[in-house]
Image 1 (cartoon, rainbow, N blue to C red):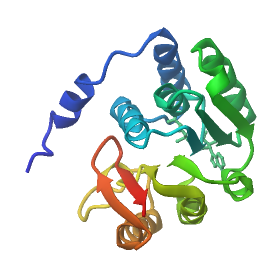
Image 2: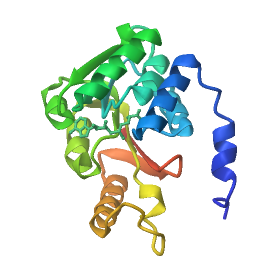
Image 3: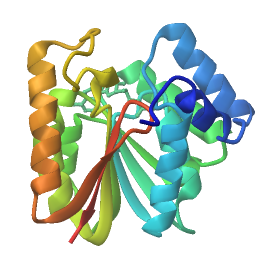
Image 4: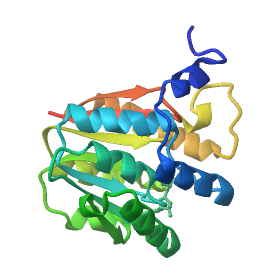
Length: 212
Ligand SMILES: C[S@@+](CC[C@H](N)C(=O)[O-])C[C@H]1O[C@@H](n2cnc3c(N)ncnc32)[C@H](O)[C@@H]1O
């Protein structure tokens, strides 16, 4: 049993210090209570992008651009991440931050519903990150799988719901229905013959699936 107290802090301590713009974005998110990826999840995204040598990436749920920055920085030369967000204020904040972070030419930020956006995209793409409304995951995953090239990967955040997916854990702000829905989502993903998939206990839980 290694998931005792301290392990999460230890893994986080291994993540390189953020540069000035990323630190400012993280402080903004903390101040305004905007949910963003944990630092170790950001690092995992960079690793997955590197593993898939991704040039064409897609994200649903830009918020103010923290995960977008991790993805953009890890893309292969000439790569682009298309990122969908429905909140105009967050979308504009992301545009400003990502420009200042020097990745403005690697990001294509779209103020648009992610499900609609995914349906309109043409593949193949190398990498997809889903991090918007959790109830939309099944539909968005289906669209992502239709876009991914063989060997491409999709990562989905918050699939352990702050631990609420396990029996006997406090539900925090997640409802019983959220828990049942997420359990079914994880089980269906891992059993899906179109992918090789697993759930990682990184950050708030990240499911990773590689397209066959
Ligand atoms: C958890 S936050 C994203 C955090 C971001 N990925 C990061 O780690 O920096 C989820 C975001 O998804 C946005 N969102 C919710 N539903 C959406 C949808 N259908 N399409 C696009 N964005 C959506 C919310 O406005 C919110 O900013």
